[in-house]
Image (tube, rainbow, N blue to C red):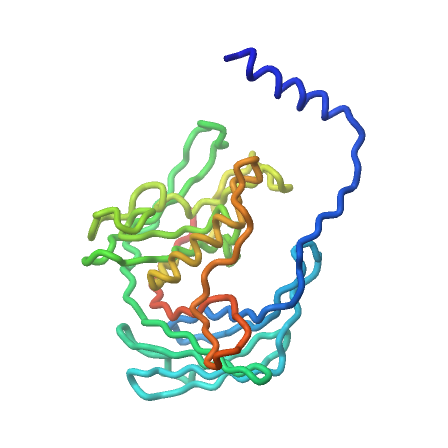
Length: 301
């Protein structure tokens, strides 16, 4: 077996000394597609829907913004509507008045978007989220390649009833930890839907994915521990629908993509819940979700 493995290893070593040629890859990009990025919540803060167009995979620039659309959110349960206005760069915003919010747990919503001659809709329920019970931290010695330093974890319990899905977001000193490897998704307190668990405390790998994760292929210093004295930690639990959970899971797989190994997955779009009302409307991408959010924050002492 060692002899069989030696041959490709030798070929790879030989290739590393060969000349490098620039190879132009055709991404087969033909036409831009409409993208709706609408992750809203019940908090009394400004809510934003981002509209854009897709572009060639290899184009190193921000995607083109859509600036001439109409965006309206309907609370189908309460019979109210909210008009989002364009604020620039494809961002459409709605700001609640004091004491006002999008709705309550259990409400159903429809997002309506008009773009050019087409009309699109997406629906979502506002599902409940469990409270964050606590955020704890401790000093750990260096182990398994992780530097010595302060590490944190949060505690929360999945709500009763199978099929609860969540997106846990962490902010370090006000900065969202938004690397693909730091996307923290949970179903019923575990990683997977259909695990058969219910109303359990979130499992340790999810509790601990509130620590900064350095990337080997970036300039991150992997000798710096996640937290230090004086750092501020905020943990939010966003209740998301099961389709939203699947959308984000596929998106995370695409962004990490097998860590760029030879086992990387083929590039593909996550399934959208934004649909065109006209039979011949061009396909839309992106997703719409309205979340209940619970949160807790601490300062490392």
